[in-house]
Length: 141
Ligand code: THU
Image 1: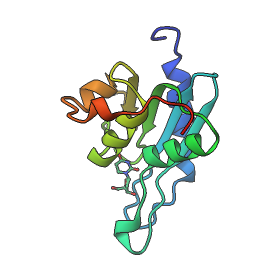
Image 2 (image 1 turned 135 degrees about the horizontal axis):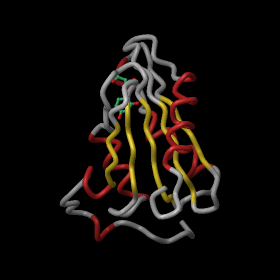
Image 3 (image 1 turned 45 degrees about the horizontal axis):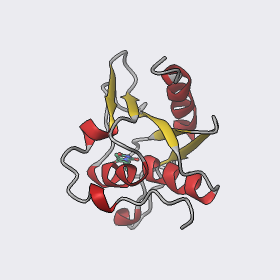
Image 4 (image 1 turned 135 degrees about the vertical axis):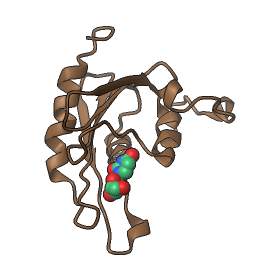
């Protein structure tokens, strides 16, 4: 538990949802689980496309799903990459998008199929965010 957040449970959700990934081209499945401030967990997977550049990452799909469900306050993120042994963290584009909705202290866990886990924060993954002052905190828009 980190500040009463059950990162083990959140990671299990990411691990389970990774099985739903659509990744026939890379064969690299990714599952993401976002803990919302109301206690719900919203998940996402990577969705690839034969036009490779249209692929969308698990983390951003989880954020999009959550926002579409009216959830904007997040407490933690877990990412599972079962097709790598070692942990693989969110890509650069995802780090930018995560930083739109999560402050620097939000805990992030990611891991592959072995026992190694990375436990970090949004601020560590995306430091020196030069546009952080533009980040919106309004719940109205
Ligand atoms: N991928 C993610 O879903 N999240 C990341 O942060 C890294 C990359 C996906 C995209 C693509 O479907 C596959 O992993 C290989 O890059």
